[in-house]
Amino acid sequence: APWTASVLTLFPEMFPGPLGHSLAGRALANGLWRLEASDIRGFATDRHHMVDDTPAGGGPGMVMKPDVIARAIDAAKAGLPAAPALYLSPRGRPLDQERVRALAEGPGVILLCGRFEGVDQRVIDGRGLEEVSIGDFVLSGGEPAALCLIDAVVRLIPGVMGAAETLAEESFTGDLLEYPHYTRPTEWEGRQVPDVLLSGHHGRIRSWRREQAERLTRERRPDLWSRYLARQGGGMRPTD
Ligand code: ADE
Image 1 (tube, rainbow, N blue to C red):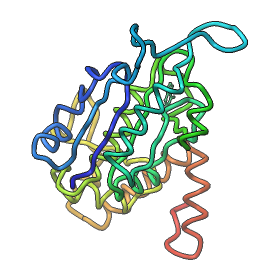
Image 2: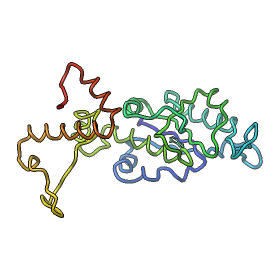
Image 3: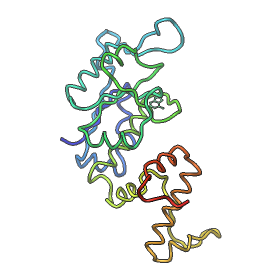
Image 4: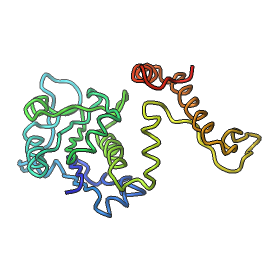
């Protein structure tokens, strides 16, 4: 069975959204991956299809009801028993490329998108939901975060990306920020394409790109730079 994203949301019409376009969209149409967006409201059992209620202890906003979420999760788990169930939340462990790779190697993922102030803690604990964040900023809901996570995974599925080289290139400079890219014309608004890229010396081009990737990483992301230096220990050494 193809890799499957099972999304639980109050806004199923947000899916596939951007993932219905471009590479991910073509791959979806070609059956290289599957998307199931389930409406959480469909799991409400009362006459008014209530999915949220006022917070215990008072305070602003609304909290998603544990019984409704639990039924939605259980239905998704029945369809994708071996997939991890993640709750997208700014409190979660930050998503990184290592986790994205691990998810791509599995059968799929169940993604709970929260709205309002969040989800009753008892369903997070009781269903063993793992909280995952896509970054240190707060979205109005988990849906855009789910779209980001799925996009990151889907581009790693074999056959989804056009050129296999693009992914191979990534593993070459995998722990670094990307080097700068250029195309024609060789001069634009007084700015030149770096000479080395026009030289045809593939060895020199390769080392220039690595230098640039290392410089950018050192300048902008000391956290990634430290990890890179640690991982390089013994093997190929970075310039500088
Ligand atoms: N929901 C709201 N903000 C989020 C974030 N930063 N990451 C994941 N889910 C979220």
